[in-house]
Amino acid sequence: MSEKTSQTAQGSANATDAASTLLRDLIDYAGLFPPASLAMVRSVANYEEYSRSRWNGILGRFVVPVARLTEFEGAFTRLPNPPSGAVTVKWRLSTILGSDPQADAARIREFNLRMAKSTSSRTAVIESAEVTVTSAREVERISAIIPQELSTYFEIPSSSASDCIPVLARCARRAKIRTGGETADKFPAPADVVKFIHLCAANNVPFKATAGLHHPLRSIHRLTYQPESPLGMMHGFINLFLAASFLRAGMEGKLAVQLIEEQSQQAFHFDEDGVSWREDRLSVREIAAARQDFAISFGSCSFTEPIDDLRSLSLL
Image 1 (cartoon, one colour):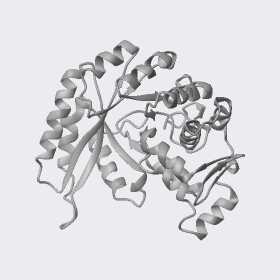
Image 2 (image 1 turned 90 degrees about the vertical axis):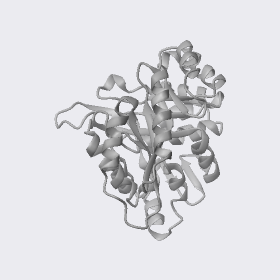
Image 3 (image 1 turned 180 degrees about the vertical axis):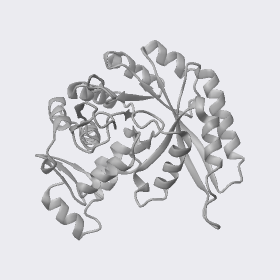
């Protein structure tokens, strides 16, 4: 992200190997959710467009509530047919569970069975679920209901992280952290973010993040898309996922807090072998290992906003 990085990126196709590794499958598209709150037809059309764009390697899953699966299926089946002779396209979905996990699990199973029988050149599969809980006991109760083969992320209160994350490890489930919202009080302190990631790393619990991560670097932006909405400091997804990779590699918590708080693009340098943040460095292999089975993705109601920012930083 330094001037040197920008020059190197323009001169070599391999110069952003570390950045590409960090960004691969990173953004789960949640256009249905605030602050975008798009209609289903628009969100589905957007995901189709993004999946065919030059940046599709960064695109992760389409996020949809279980309660809206029928609506999703209607919009999905009305998409224009892929070009003749095109390979079968399989959308990856992540579903948000409601108040009845048992009924939701049945709906997910039925949806996947129906899609598996489809002869269309475009199909979909629910490969993960997300659910909000308030306690370790609730983690255990819901975990016993959801089929083990469905990767399930439990959004837990920061005050209960120490209790919930070890239980997630025992249940072979995943964690989810809310990193922002439409008001400033929804953004957790850097120290709380690091505590969450460190607990996940210590217990070998994969995690994802959601909300407030529209921009690569920590910076001040409007909290919604309304012209007069309040300004607030927002976490950066580069900061967060690099901090996760560094923490997994043994970085101390206090230093990771400084990384989460970093606002200078000159502090980061990506190249073909790895990434440096000030005096610390990660190899491409360490980044890949963290992204593969630890720091999984983040949900965003915008895909174009993060992409535009990444391009401005010469990371794409």
